[in-house]
Length: 275
Image (cartoon, rainbow, N blue to C red; front, side):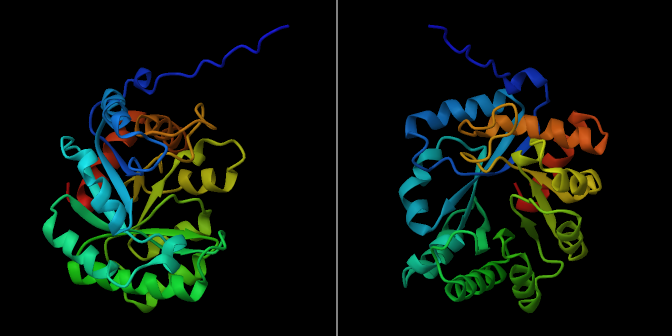
């Protein structure tokens, strides 16, 4: 009986990108990673040229339970918010807990990922919209950036942001997967777009077309670890080091040098998050 040959997948460090890249959006405190794996995962990211990682905590309970995973890793900064799919589970004291966390922890740099998700039928749209508005108001009161999650809800998300007066405020559209229309809506309001691994997928032609036309000064890069691994690691658990392949693809689409894309998006992220 013949055995299927194991596919060889390249090491992201082999791309030779310099130190200075920023992984702007990862979930390393989820069950896909054992706590003892986090150090080696971050070491692999550093070897691939990643100098800072934004870990997104999905709610105050996760933040309080898991923040010590990163106590000895100063390259990790924090993002905290209630995901729209968890809006129905939001407890009465969660907003106060988040506000207290931001006032007590300098590594918390943005409210997110927050917004609307009409793809997964787990929280009602009315509840999502209410919780979204409450968290936007929290971000405004704290004067911190916002990280947006929007899936199959782009027009409602934009309408709420407009109604809340967020034009030209510091805001990034996480896991940007839209085409030229959404890119125009985001950039015309003075916001940033964060480009994820699916830009490497051959069938994502609308996303590729949009990214090719973007201004490099207006984008960040992310993995959304542990999800959405880029080619050639698609289908495997994602991790911050693999952002190097996303940078390579974005550079090809923009017809720029990969190191330029890598370092410029890193600088964009450092300015946006203040890290």
